[in-house]
Figure 1 (cartoon, helix red, strand yellow):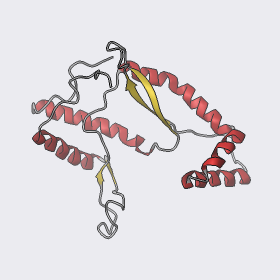
Figure 2 (figure 1 turned 45 degrees about the horizontal axis):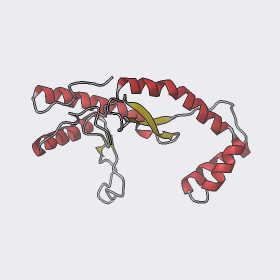
Figure 3 (figure 1 turned 60 degrees about the horizontal axis):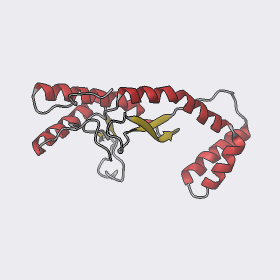
Figure 4 (figure 1 turned 180 degrees about the horizontal axis):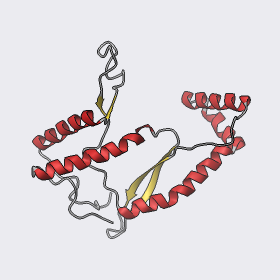
Length: 197
C-alpha cells in the first residue's frame, strides 16, 4: 500500500478522546434521527416488546476524505454507468441467461426474478422505469510512484442497496457538529490540515 495522501488523518486519539467521540456520536445520532431499529439477531423481540428501541446507524468515526478531483471524475462517468446498467436491464434475453444460472444458488435473486416473471406475464402497465443506482469508489494511488495523483477505482455498483442514502446528509451533519465541538474544546483536530484536490 502506498503512502497516504492524508498522512495526518485520521488523527491519533487517546482512549479518553475516543470515549468522548463515541458518546457524542451516540447522543447526536439518537437526537437527530441517525438511527435504525436493531436487528432481532442483536436484540430479541422479548427484550424490545413494543419495537421502539433504536440504535445509532453505522457511521464512520471520522469523515471519509475524498479528493475533489476524484469526486468530479466519479460524477463525470456516472451518466455512462447509469445508461449501461439501464441497457442491461432492458436486454431481457441476455439478462435471462445470466439470472437463470444465479437463481439456483441465490434465493434473493430467485425471488426477484419470480416477481419480474409475474409482472412480465401480467403485462407492463407503463413504458417508464426508474433506476436507483449507487456507485462505490475507492481512491487509489500508485504505490510504485510516490508522486502519482489519486484516481478512483469502482469497487461496487448497486441497484438495490441504497437504503441508507437518506441518512448520508445526517452523517455529514454529524461530522460537522463533531468538528465544531472538538475545535471549540481543543480536544483534537477533526479534519486534516492540508486537503488534497
